[in-house]
Length: 82
Image (cartoon, rainbow, N blue to C red):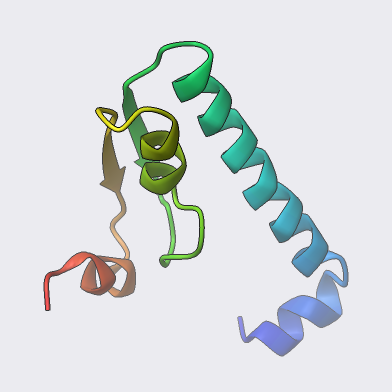
């Protein structure tokens, strides 16, 4: 579905997406910094954006390890080395 149609059908989608991203950051930060979690599995992460799971987790705990799993070929192309 093109973005214009999605926005027309769900006018709050941009705000909801931003809130979802903010929640992900808070949750990962808490798990890494407070709960001592060092292994993360991010399922269907979509295309790269700011404050990805590995960035947030490794700021709090540099030894944290993250595995991203997605079957979208476009997302996969962003994960390949140049």
